[in-house]
Amino acid sequence: MNKHPQRPPVSANRKMITFLYYKDLPAAMRFYEEVLGLSLAIDQGWSKIYHVTGEAHVGLVDETRGSHRAHPVKPVQICIRVEDVDAWYAYIEQVGPDGLRPPRSSAELGIRAFVFNDPEGYQIEIQSALT
Image (cartoon, rainbow, N blue to C red; front, side, top):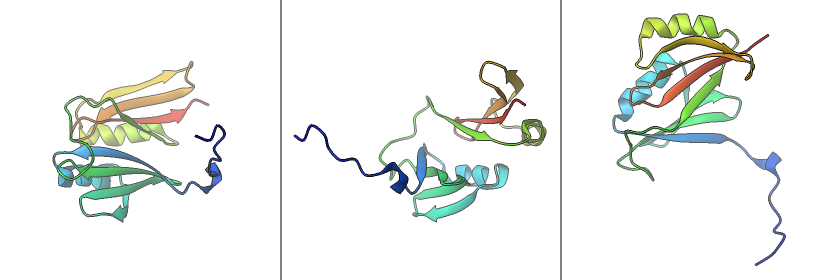
């Protein structure tokens, strides 16, 4: 084995995709499109990849076809940084998703944020930098 393998340049990376696994893919799609306003970037049939920002994406996968199965424990948080966290909270509060918690500021982290759950329990955090 080569002790010093040559890694391809990180600058050649094209996209970052975080995949989440769902029992009800159509419900997850509706949530990410209608509630969060994300656009479908790549349609792979049983895997739907949504553009979040820049080259960051979230992939929604039908658990019956993907590498993993949906699980009741979701140790994953999707975090989206926005300019106005309070405007997003006012909007999300009207939608009424499960697990919605009011915004809090953290001087230690330098953020103001709130969280809520998507239709199958993945936690979404919306945050802004403290000024």
